[in-house]
Amino acid sequence: MIDMPALTGRRKISMSEKIYKTGMTPGSGTYDCTNCHTKVHLGSGDTMPPCPKCTNNEFTKE
Ligand SMILES: [Zn+2]
Image (cartoon, rainbow, N blue to C red):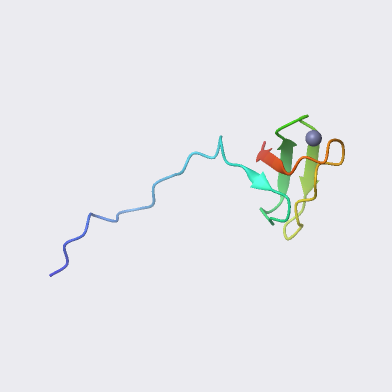
């Protein structure tokens, strides 16, 4: 009846290239502007602002 690939445990997704954008609430942590590498610190539930230095909207997580 059930013919699915085994679902034993979740695969880990590489986070190294994940992009977080302005307006997202990615959780607490330090985020790095992809343009000028200014660091933005967010708490849990905080919304990602534009980069305070260059107004870029994309960040990676440190
Ligand atoms: Zn920036």
